[in-house]
Length: 628
Image 1 (cartoon, rainbow, N blue to C red):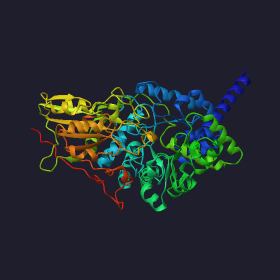
Image 2 (image 1 turned 90 degrees about the horizontal axis):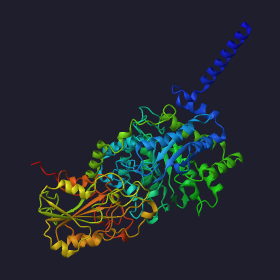
Image 3 (image 1 turned 90 degrees about the vertical axis):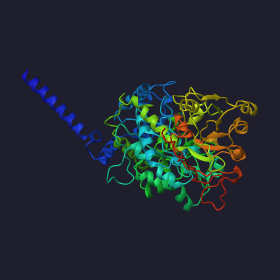
């Protein structure tokens, strides 16, 4: 009996020793180990199947905990409008993300997933999130410190939903407003775009002192992974056609479209997304010289490079016509994580085949996986893989809405204010007998917010999310005895016969995103032009343009007494009323040249032939009314 007991004790001690030895060797799970030690240790333990899984990002609509576990999926995303359920709460989002994460943690090595979302002007897919002005409006503020604060607020609202990765900022330099993504660009001037990369430390946190250049950094559970996009030249395509070809020499590519990437890398940006577009007919998703050669080797970017949505499919024309070629070309070009939102098994099978047949070297796979693991380790994902509810109240918080309202105020550009400086119309008096508010954009929260809001293309109407329409903001700002009459599209006779003190006309573009926003005419949506003509022909008026870019306004300019570019201000329409009525002064400056006719396009500041309606940097100022 004693011998049996001694044997059992010995066996238990042996098992303990084996367990301790194994634990000792799991260096990747030890946060005290150096970063590169953890990466190397984990990589050495991974099978090819596990490595390829890390390189895959799929949409939540085709995902489950079992899928994540079975295929060792490295990342998930919500594409535009891809939500757990309509009007989902922050708690709903946390629960969904955690359910997928538990699938990842149940794998042999327990490598957590990263969950990504298009938080391009706040956490804009999520119901009741704060919707900040789109980037073109932020460019008009000329205020990088404000943009950094917006990054901080956005990070909190993204983390409030359990998500760790924001596909932002877009650092495109839009050189032609006919491009459907122009509102995602801060400016036609790369210097402004460079300054606005200050959003990256807002999203990720400040990189530690003496951090090696190019190494990504995310400062804990209140920050998110940022993504500089779309690399490179996406804002320079011919006629502004989305996903098309940028014809450019190396000097201008490096001088116009590349500089903001230098700033982003210096600030520790974790990921860079490749553009659908081409440089001199070479697709960026297959451009090894610019992705591996320049970005990774010359600029020493150490984070990971991610494809756009089905980006490698579009290497061929038509898309997906030679998928094996697309996988081989895209991965060998230097793409590390591939957004294959729907048909992920085809990609996994194709990539596995190519590696096993030596068409893609294992060294290329290891480089990709190292970069992905580096970001996961740096952000503390192995230590804190599951989200909790501690930040849910950050979603749409009062503080963030106040910040958005400030951003709206600073983004407004005053283009005309009376016929001369002696007779300005703005600021408007709050005390008036009766005022007219007109236009399709006066009482439409969806139009105010634009594309990439709840749905990919945006949504018209006031049931989109929570916020303040400009009409309701006007009503709450004027004197209690001032009668506010709203009529969307009044005729001239109505305007003349109602004895209005003045009118505010709000017109602009309907919502759009990406290719559906490409436009060769850049007109104000009907019946906007008629509304301007009828209202401004009958009473003194201020026209507020709600648009993602300059639009055709010259034909109506003579009849307009005051003109304001409000861009796409987002959920906090009160910021527009704050400035119209003089609680704050106008201070915004044009981030883009305002053309006379579309025939002049493309036309940018510094061009030899430069004859704008309003030049880049233009913006009249007003002083706030003194408190009575």
